[in-house]
Length: 525
Image (cartoon, rainbow, N blue to C red; front, side):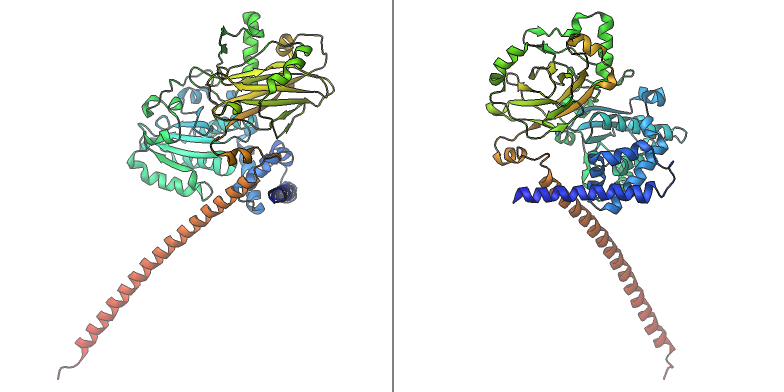
């Protein structure tokens, strides 16, 4: 019964997406001025199912509401030139303040978007640039980690009323409420001074029923419930030594990976210093996913390419016991399985996963697999080539007693080799244009081995397996909206009760006054 129901749910979603696209094109694009939206946004809505689904989900699959949200969002993107925002288009001093930046992860593996409130001040002259500054960070992350939510952290330490700009706060709320659907995991207000309670009550009213449950108020001790100490600053009781500085952006620094035998000498290490700088620039562009953590930042594993015969003889041994992928991402050069995440557990049989790359081109395709935690994982092979129409099985295994974490990420890079055999891989990766490199990111999913049903559910065949979760999300959002409406009705009833009480008291007073006047007006006998 589960499979037919899931299939029906997927078909219903496809119909909603198609209806949204058709109506937006007919009722908004063709009916309005062509200059109202950026054509790139309109085109993306027509081709990107995840984008259309995001708006629908955030509006509980009500197409009319989703269309209004898309209209508002696209107009904002056009007004602020979001598609063309670059680091150079933002005033340098904004980056230097460190008031807003991406760094670290919460315990669920969501990226942290920090707002240092004490560094903000209300200034009408700079409000537009501040808004663009926030849009820059959000758009940057959306392009690097599509579909991955953010956890917003308002660090209220040492802040006061002079640091609260309600217009700016409302703008930030709207970014997640309207402009970037499904982007908000949670919003944590840390160490809020009591004097700001009234201000944040107003903020709470702006969030609306779909996001109100995502607002969390936490003290310095309570914030550890959401974020581990390794990603909390020392003034919050954490151990993260990260200190913001600019330039470069906090995600632009990389370290050389290590192995059991010490430093791994990669293909790039044998080149000149100039070559190293070129590679670093390429890496910054290709895997710039805002990872700026303590000593381990984004690191890379690059194994030497083994011969074809050698690969064939040890493939079965390498892949034995590895978790096989059940979903597939359809890429322009390679199909990547799994589509979104590698699943690891605590058992001995749950520490190895397979990544299967299938070449869908007519040429040989070079690939690399990189990870943010090379000291924890072994990737074999991590760099090689895939023949036209062929597939390559890559084994990703946890090393030693290491445990997988939701914060860990993997990046698959691929580029078509039009002149196969005429150049070595090391030289090829140095010369290939960035625009010709395909990238696909995978996150880590931690299986709860003591709950077999969880594993079975996550391993169920079908593309995404999110139908049940989707229905649950819809139910929760509807319940939240219902509670919000009930709360509003209750408040209005209480207000009405107070009004009626006052009216009753007034009527009683008038009645007593009438009795008094009548008694005084009677003639004395």
